[in-house]
Length: 117
Image 1 (cartoon, one colour):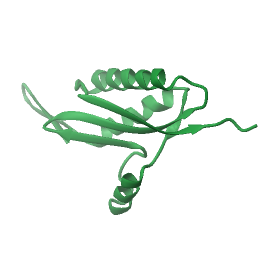
Image 2 (tube, one colour):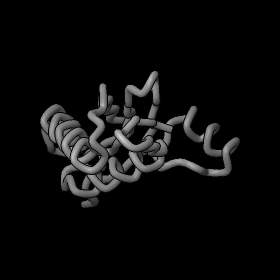
Image 3 (cartoon, helix red, strand yellow):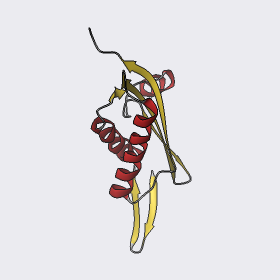
Image 4 (cartoon, one colour):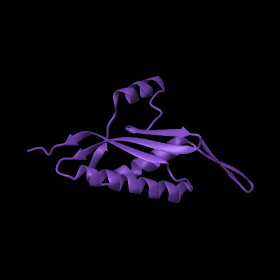
């Protein structure tokens, strides 16, 4: 949970809120086909009854937000440009909605979706 101290109390935001915002950003980018589970994530989901967004890991390190995103991109796109676009959108949206700027957005491209012939 991320906690900010305000003038009349505090504000706490769970990591799941950041994951949902990130998930919405992913869906807004046409060149991304979706998120991907990795092996560690599958184990985590199994042990924690699936309480996490697929392909998105939010790490809270001393109130610094680090987001790891595993995605599948569509074949033929410029992968570097798509990842930069995703990073910029996630930072912009999270900062606009929560007032917190993520420290890092790490995008891992685990798959490429090839069009069916």
